[in-house]
Length: 345
Image (cartoon, rainbow, N blue to C red; front, top):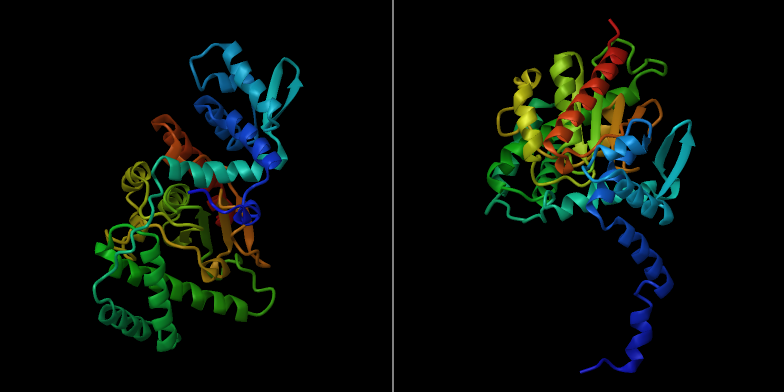
């Protein structure tokens, strides 16, 4: 039965306009090709933000005219710009589309291929006694933090980890580890803010702390954190987090993490809590000397005295085996350079 005519204006007020829909559909049509998506991801995550047509041709076995056709479609849609320098043509993403393309590749694409599954909120049947025990244990271990604050952090941590979904089997030990990390970060942040002006976060008087942030905390940020921990040991405190954490670490990345061994963290975590996606918290940012973002946009608060870097690196969840290896090597190079800058001696 058709809806009454009177409801049409109300429905129209909620729908995208016809002209806007036509423009968006035209752009989406240009994107709706596997090779074009690979080209765009390669360009947007390249070191200089631009790539030559010859380099793009290596992504496929199709002929050069076919590659040129796809690039022309992307240019005509407004997604790409091109410059000729000598005998080479360089392609880059138009600035107006950079944020939108980042959202497409970092949020929509992982969901489309199933790496960001919808969360299943299945917690413990009776979590109260376990959470109360965790709060008591943390209050005893961190006497500078009141028990009431420990209770709040434990319950918030449990709820945050529950919301990201995944297997609830290890929810309590994950909550204990995440809550403990949050309290350590909060106490460190308070100490930093209470320190005399000019103390210098990286002045050599304490261990520098680095926070890696990506969308899901299931790939790039986990791998970068593990690489830094691998090279630095206990000389640098390392954290990682996600603006929208996934239920679990990507399988391809977990294999790389296992190969690294993560010996530097052996005394801090057990096998269950060694690698798991966790939400981004304000205290983690406040406690960090360096915050490295990778495709998570502007979710990190910008604090004075904190060093920020944005690393443009591909997502291993969407990469081929060769691409995953290349991403690992790129992160390793960047991590080594960061470590040399933090600890020049």
